[in-house]
Image (tube, rainbow, N blue to C red; front, side):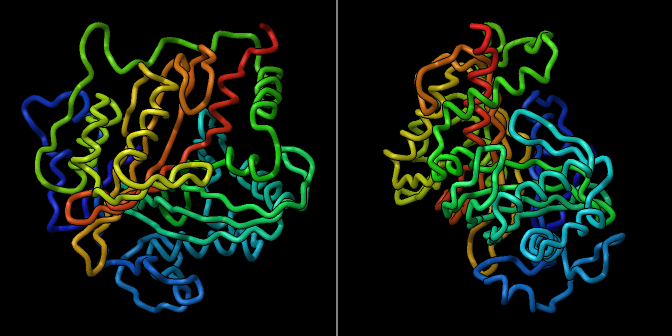
Length: 389
């Protein structure tokens, strides 16, 4: 994977500095900044207004000149592929050998992208994708990485891998990280709130997860699937407790994730969040204030109580005209589902949860947050091998 570079001259990325003695956490986690002056942010624009902007500041070698900047690239191809049904745009903007990380599984190759797009549009032909934010940075010398948060509305008019068409109208959140070079997306991390989708369709998520697990097992030879346990502790050593190296927003997010999610200092929510902060959790749950936010974190971590919480990437964009930042944090929670928590009774099975959070940080504290992961995929992992029990 190519290394990214900082584009905001005023921000010093201390995580990438060479130090005499770096901990493992410092080596594995990176923070990146995109220069907001180079793009037209989504901000409060409706797509009708965003699409007619003409400002062109960003240099994009290898990209089609019709795109004003990288935010425009992401917004426009999403609109053309899904809402205009220009499926062929995928051939223009995706790499033949693309890797798509979807929850606990991966897809490889452009043909799967085409197939999945057509099948989704068959099931939800009137899908509208409202781009709520695109957080971005450089990705290597000539590439970019985006973190695109989307609110979709759709009507289930066709059969899908969830089941027969229901005719019901739904809404759901998707967050997608895309790594793009030379006008083509070559790696993508996609998290969609599928648990909320099937709940709105009137489908029992546990019964569906059992069917999905059984179907997955039927396609896979009976081989070993687990090669070790991911835990918050390494042997008898306590988890690492990351300390911010400066007062930058990226360092604050790394410290918050380490203290609250990894070390489980859940009381420190009060240190990192405003007292009236709002967290938009999966399944359309909004948490307001310290008590509810702490409760949400406890409920999630209780399902994998000794699991490893790892931050893969933090991307930061300064908010125009405000003393704040838009931040994307991609993470994984891995371990054994051995506790009663958000997902109900424990299965004793290993699970891996990939999530992407978008955060609005104002005056050094989190004001609003969107937490997105695929809860249905977690249930599927919990029921893996159930046909043999």
